[in-house]
Image 1: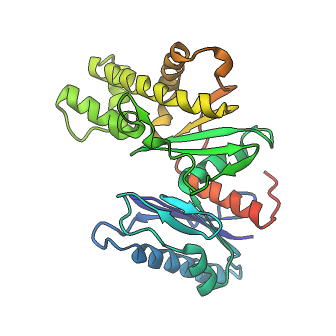
Image 2: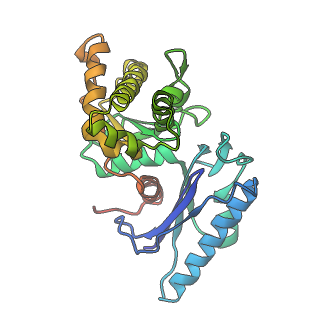
Length: 304
């Protein structure tokens, strides 16, 4: 089986072709999301349709066929209709983009569309050692903070498909993502140091050398992040919390600090989940999650 998995973000679009076991056929492609100058969602649609068409042609050359498309995308997604129902500033004019209908119409192919954090959560749930009825919260930390819920083994989308939009939770008088994202961490470090063009890697490398501003920045971030975890833990009481995003490549440094601060804030340890873990997938999480969701929806048995 050959399934094209596409991850659409505000910065890049990544794609690859997989089999039903999640093995890549090495068709990986990454390009900038075509929005900066075009500012029209239909150009993203055109890009995706061209990508599907090119993949079909490539597979035909080796006497194989494309059997489905699985899309992970930024924005609030209606997974039943396969369309974008809300999007922020990162992809202007994206609302209403209907991937599922277009791919069905032009290529007669089944298609699933998931919010990118929902897809990441589904990837972690599908490949992790979680029971089939587990409850899991997945948070991804990057430009903002995104969230997704799996309750009793099922993705929970919410009434308006916006369940898990934790970035808007109020934390210390601001939005969660404004005080506990990678962007917020870099801005705080730059305010302390007067430096510019900082990234997470620079901050953590400085932390390893006991740089005072880096130490203060990471503790500030962990303080805010642990505060943001509290309402999630009290309201949902999940068995597991999985933390993803590029910043979690530094989980050996960051996670113990978050856990220490959370332990000091929680009313009682009985409220804590069984485990708070770093995600296994990073850059591939959206594609793999969308792939597994496609496999579940269309009844293809995966034997990982």
